Length: 318
Image (tube, rainbow, N blue to C red; front, side):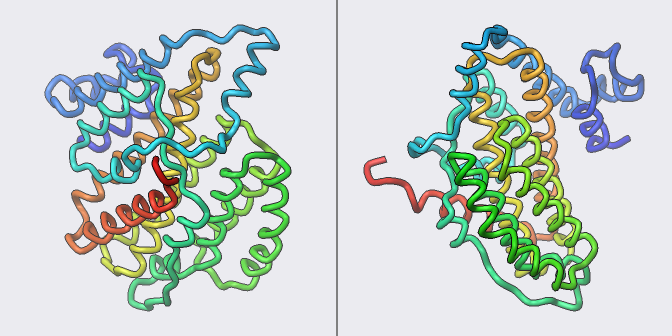
């Protein structure tokens, strides 16, 4: 097995000790410093999460936890964009930074507003020479479904979420039925529509974060498929889709990390979320190393644009 396959198995493993790992994987770790270092970071990450105090079963403690997880209207502190963190060439530096965030309880990332997302959106046309990837990159209905999901997640009350879904879902459903989408793009659109319906009536922060990490994985799969062709217009649209959802996922995870008391089940879900998100981010780093030069430049450029768009709405004096 190569290092990528070994790292994927580490992310999926139930335990990270030598006894818990398959012999072939454990043997590889003895001779590969990079994979061994990754396992050490994952062990420290899980140990930090397990060290958090356990939430009591009292109703008062439960209400306090839910209150802490409610979306906040206040502007997030001015910090480095999470999208820029994704673009760091050093995977080791990013993993250490992620571990520090968990240990210290996390910080709130700058929230991408609806106006910022509008700036980030583009339109395009089908390029028949790039097949499925070009069709995926040209589907404006999927862009609108991504925006709807982000708008729903940013809404502060269930009533506001219901209003957004009621206003946007009907025309999007009608457009989806009329558009002749490629199978992969249609599957993604259906997933986003179903996810939006769930968001309109649910506010559980763990379920919400897990759903967004699923969406981020699907969007990255499209980006990875399109990268070898190097079509700038397609890469711009697919990178923006992925980058916006990845930034929202960072914000959701930071809110969970900021909660001081988690019960054992919540700790387990949080650890699993961190590992799944880290796996997607590792795949992005691998893609930026293997993709053609033009594709790498386009992906980095669009991720930077998303970070800048998120900062444009920073309140004066912040």
